[in-house]
Image 1 (cartoon, rainbow, N blue to C red):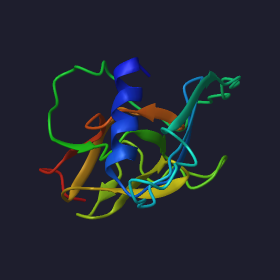
Image 2: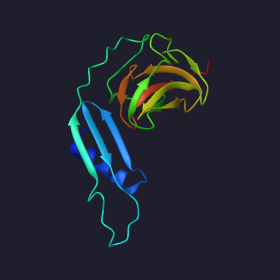
Image 3: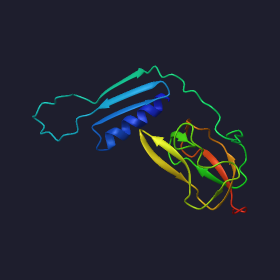
Image 4: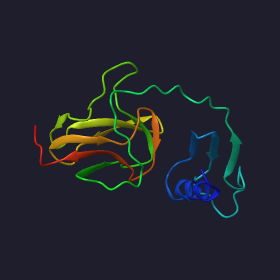
Length: 162
């Protein structure tokens, strides 16, 4: 996470009704507390400004075991089919739990709106669904991988409807 990312997060907190935000990711721990109650000009402030602290977090690297036969080409590789994109940045899960079978594999038939994976964003689990019907031709994100907004997670071949 870059300094500009931290600034963007602080601006989002300032512009939204959040009073407190705790974020831990990629070895960074960010805790922001802000008092947003309305005050009269003569009323003293309990806190003068938003309080924020940034400290490196000791995060052990998770053990990553390959899950199924995923085809993972380079991130900038050309796409042949319909991409399944990450709606936000977060941790992508290909399976519902450790040791469970993945939601889809290369060659799996999917329906439009069918579950392809789960994206964890600040402890909230969000379904990643297929934008069209077809067959999974590529899986570009590994289980428990941190993915960026708009990153291609998988590719669907809409010509091969299973």
